[in-house]
Image 1 (cartoon, rainbow, N blue to C red):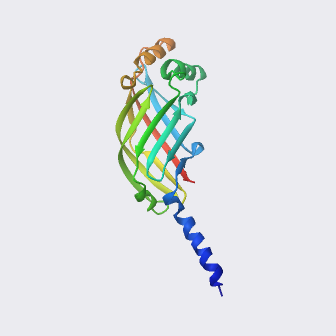
Image 2: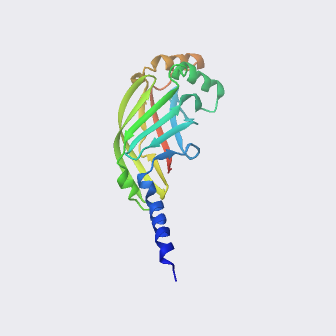
Image 3: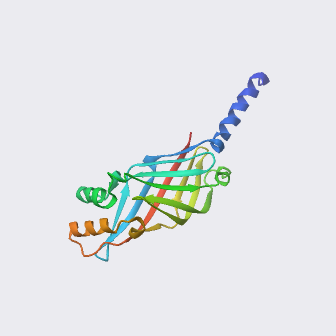
Length: 196
């Protein structure tokens, strides 16, 4: 027979542990997350690139921020990475890109493990000293009581001119001896957040 004196505090601790994520801050798991973009050169050659270092947080009020270390760009070709860092992103002046949004966490917190929820919300993107807002379509999945995943249902399409990147694209094209590089780039993400 259970000792009720011991059981009540034990039960309280179990319940408290179960509700912690609803009131916790959520932090990005960089190792399990991915942010990638696709470029097209000479009209019909598409290549996938990604950023290796991401930092992110969603606070208990739903304020979400994703910081992208632009130095971590990875195209699989070191020389091209170096050109993108210095000539396109100009990382000495603009080392990071920032994505921010306001999320209603309650519906996500109410999800059972494995359940999903479509989100439509504005995202603010700051890159190269310029900020633009995009309507996004995301899918949130509750993985377990302490983790959820957010993926882009549709890629965000960023335009070089909106971020004053046209001179950088021209410099890349000239350095690589290309006829053309696309000025619009689709960006996709798979982001895993863990409650702490």
